[in-house]
Image (cartoon, rainbow, N blue to C red; front, side, top):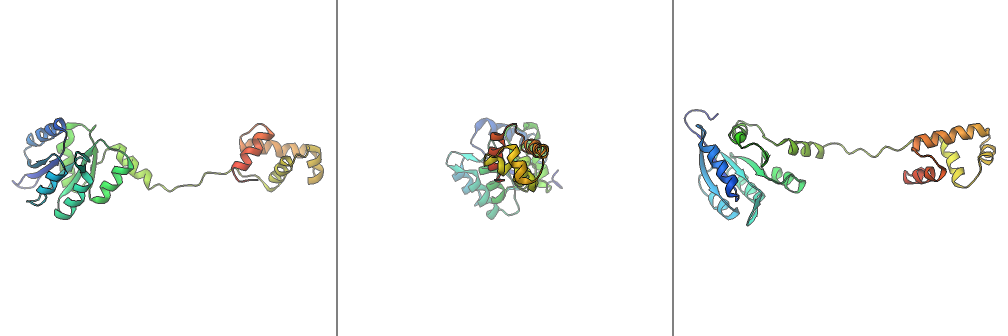
Length: 214
């Protein structure tokens, strides 16, 4: 809730009349917020940024004359104390990350419940960052360490046996070249098939080459 008798001043930049109407209604239904200003495009929003600052700015990204990211960036410079929240249908990296980098500290998709609009604004004003679960997951995944694909590990002897198989030697010839019995060669082959998850010589050779083992 806003402290004292001063209500939160909320500005919305939204070109969709239906959503804009729902947003305005949600703000007007509260006792601790007032609608500071409304803009339907980038040009109108930029003009409003030259005036008295709002406490909270809610911005759509898909505006008819440009991107809401332009508004976010300009608002972050003009109204440094203003909390900025995105409300949009865009959930891809091309919009999410640039919005946050431009200065947004909240990011909600328009599939969020309209009844939560006021609560999300209060959360943002109190220092929180309301973010739709899909967006939060996308951000977390972006910072997850990238692990190299696991390679099947063949022992030196298994790799030697596979190299000889690739050259066309028979199991008896491989046994003689490696100085082991034929049964030992067959054991190597079974292990190779298991580790590479294959069931034939051709598949084993293909998988080994694709994993850089040959």
